Length: 361
Figure (cartoon, rainbow, N blue to C red):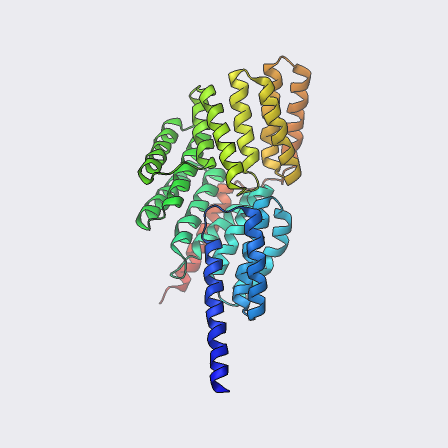
């Protein structure tokens, strides 16, 4: 009888260990087909529930919540994620809290809440400790750099990107190194720093050659944006056609990716003079934005549509698109009364003071 009990305990421990490894394979992947990932996470949640392991159950639940966010249902993801955060806080699980804050940062960004997104990204990095995986050490710092680039500017973001690049090389996180260099290059491009964008993109391309693999759709989108800035419109259209084909072959990753790719393609086509093809691309991007509630991106789609109608001499339609762009921008969440840089500085001062108070006296 005792032997049977011990055997049952061993089986349960082995099952929990196997399930934990399966969850880690989902948690620490840069790209995954969101629909397939959701199905896998729901199955893992069912297995965790059968084991009666609450920690594994919460990890599985956070995985499918993140997959919901990636498929575009970030409102439903937001509804569930706070419960996971509360559980992790009650149980002192720093790694779970860090992961949850990163999911929340993405949800708030997609919802147009810049200040909240930035604060969650800060929390996701501050909670990193010795329990964090190598993937988390790089990825969380990269996502904070992205948030800083979007909401505070490159002077603040650049050191964070550099830190993520160095860590990725040290920890041999090669896939994350590609993503880090891609995001850094694109952020420099968006800030109008084309020499820096080309330099960082060059390091990304050199890395891809050294590791002997094809660049992913995000990286191709960045390269195409830089090609457009250099006036290489035909090359940019070809790059984006390859980008979209690879994206469709690999399966969706984030909710806003395809709409962004179509917007880049439309811009290249318009500047090339292929306004008919550009309109088709824009219509597809508009459909995705409205279906998925991508409100910030929708503003850019209307702006590009105004440019396209202007290029065609369709001034009435161009005016209507500009008005739609203004209305879409006005529908975004109201910006905070204080500039984001002031809010962030206050957050940092508060946290530094908190750490000082916790120091041994």
